[in-house]
Structures are given as C-alpha cells and as structure tokens.
Length: 140
Image (tube, rainbow, N blue to C red; front, side, top):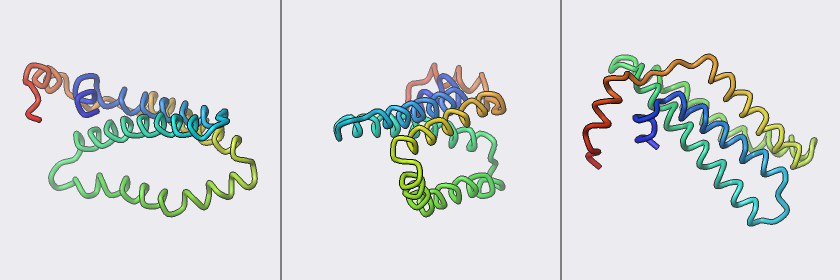
C-alpha cells in the first residue's frame, strides 16, 4: 500500500480506499451466507487499509518534527473513540433499523465522505519525490 501511495499519490489511495470499503459495506447488506459476509469483510479491510495508508502518508508529508504529535493525535483519538463507541452505536442502529439497513447506511456514509475528500483534499506527494522513488528500488 505504501508503494501505491508513493507511486500514485496519497489522495487517490485515500479516496479510492474509502470507496472500496463503502462497496464492501453495501455488499454486506446483500449477503445470505457467513462465507459471503467474510468476503465482504475482507473487501472492507482492504479498502480501509489502503485509505489508512494514504491518510497517514498525507499527515506525514505535512508534519514536521515539532508538529508531528499535534498532527497525528486527532487521528489516534478518532480511532480510539470509534473502537469504544462504534459497537454500541452499531448495535443500536442494527436493533433500530435492522442489520441490512445499518450496512447500507454505513456504506452510504463512507461513500459520501470519500466524495467529499475527492473535492477538498489536496495531494501532498511532491512530484520530484515520486520520480526519485520510482528510480530507486525499495530497501525492503
């Protein structure tokens, strides 16, 4: 995923990753077997992984040594809050709206965020950096 972020840019990886995850949530509303649900969860995981790498690389590009903690802290706080509150909200939504409607709602929300990000985010990968990394093989 980092190779893709360095090759194609942070913004496309963030936006398209969110769209892949949104599609996974939307497909989750249509499943009828546990195996299909596992496949949808894999799609969601791939999408959120790519989006997360794009977002973290974007933040790394704009952070300096002095501002790094202030740049990364809100994302860590958001993730912690999501882990703490997410299951309760998801359970309430599933009990209120039904499981399928909850998946559709989450997928639509992620797609809306992705489209918003497509409009408001700016690419942080500098073109000279991209060319230099394409010429040099990875050290991994």
